[in-house]
Picture (tube, rainbow, N blue to C red):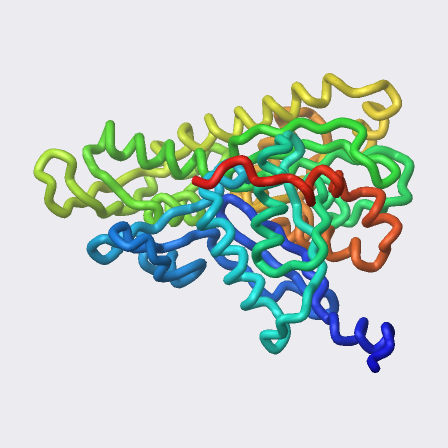
Length: 357
């Protein structure tokens, strides 16, 4: 007979899962980040059969075959399409497992701070169906803070702004707990949407997600560019003729679109900082704000935020991985994991998922 200690050795996979609107990032204890893929599913509209996930699905986006649809099953950090989220997560978990083992694993997943019980149950149920034995759930803001280097034993408060694709989480952390948090279902994807709308309405050209993402990452900045006349050619579908077309767009044209979105995020941060208790506000005045999430990579966002809130602002190392690194750290401290995870296990394990989209 196998001893319990021998069995424990077989369970090698403790997974940290950051299931985001734009990307799913999985880290495995002892191995670090093993998967970083777009949260996308490609399926056949006629048969409902899934044909690809992640990177493979992203490669099809905008150039899908007939009857094929590429869809993001999560919107604003929560499950919008339960069946496809479940299949996508199962695929990613299987891919991240060592040697394709089927042994029950434990995982800790992040969730937005204003998640409802229904949304939390949907996430929990999807993880359950993906073959995860034990699931812990943890607020994204807290995970991002730990991943950005905030210590769970630090009694002074730290402000962390996690800017994802579909959500922005603002969390104030002290002694390993959230003392104040706000969440907005609004993130850096709003830049892509605004760029696409501007190009269609004002320049008469329709573009896909790949084009707006390239514009955002390679041609956008949150401060007024020195050369506002610098231009880039954008190709797509001419709205009037319906045929292929191209326009030149300038840095000066892109800047106000990006600035409008970043201003909204900065305004939310500023408002949140007015709701703090005096001691907490004093700590934040000294320490400033840490930016995490993919949105923190936007050129000049730290300078913009610094000028807007008049406090020190820094970007965490590897901001896209801050949440997953924070989740990963929890496996080193089981007591802390149990304290910070908001599972409400009795509620969640016996609950039916109330919807199947």
